[in-house]
Structure formats: C-alpha cells, structure tokens
Length: 197
Image (tube, rainbow, N blue to C red; front, side, top):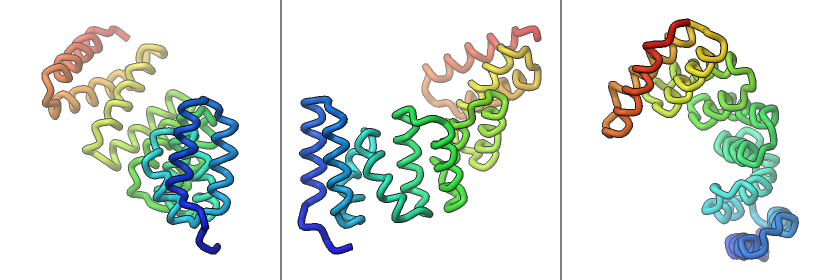
C-alpha cells in the first residue's frame, strides 16, 4: 500500500475529539474505518497508540492491523482487550487471546485475556492457576485466581477451591507492601479460615 496523503494521527485525534463532543459512535466508526482504509499501517498504529484506553477507537483500527498482521501478538491482545471492554463476548476474545498466545507464549496480556474469557467458573479458576504457574510473580493473576477460587468455594462448597483461595491470598499477603492491602488480605483470610464446608 502506498503512503497515505492523510496524517492519521491528526485525523484520529479529530475524530476522537468530535466523538467526545457528540458521543455519536456511528460517526466515529465511519471516520476510523475511512482512516484505516487509506493510512499506512505503521503510521496508523502509532496514531492510535494514545487511544488504547478507548476501546471504541482501538477496536476498529486494530481490526485492520490484525487483518494485515495476523500473528502480531501485541495487536491481537489490543484487539482482544477492546473486544472485552466493549462486550463482544468471551468467544471472540478467547479466540484472539489464544492466537496471541500461539504467536508469543510470553505475552502476559494474552494469558490474562484467555483466562478472563472462560465462562465456566471452574475452568476460569483452572486457567488462572495456569497463568500463575507460568508467571509466578504476577500478582494480578494471583488476585484473580484467589477471587475466583473463593467464589467457587462459596457457591459450590468446594474445599479444594477454598484451599486454593487461602494459599493464594496468603502468597499475596507475603509480598504486600501497602498497609491497606495487607489489612484487606488479612481480613479476607480470616473470613475464609472460618468457613465450614
């Protein structure tokens, strides 16, 4: 593709400003698709970088990026995250996350989205356990594992899930540095230790 005569950074910034004023997603989508169609890919990627936190901006642009670079793990994760935040559903997110893991098994964001996208609570707990095994220092994954396990223990009176939750919360307590975080963890551990399942 030839270099675009447009400046994608300026065009996307203008589209986002207009969207913030009007809240008209249809107009935003039309503009983003038009920009994506003619912009040079690397310039488009750089132009949308400041807007990764706005999924309705990142999603449409990264659909083109992923179409042209189907094995780019970072692009797949950005698109999967945009899909997750806009409610595209666990199947679409899980498929993108799985592709990102296949492209780059060290991409932690891909693993997080893969675990999040599992709809079965027990399978989601198992996925978070896999993520914490692969990334033992990942405290966000540990917190998700502990929360999922505690939820399963409560809903299903599952002793194994309770032990996973307790073990994981205790692990988080050992590394917690903020007093408020330590207090919250101590409180949840105290509650879980009293459960009779």
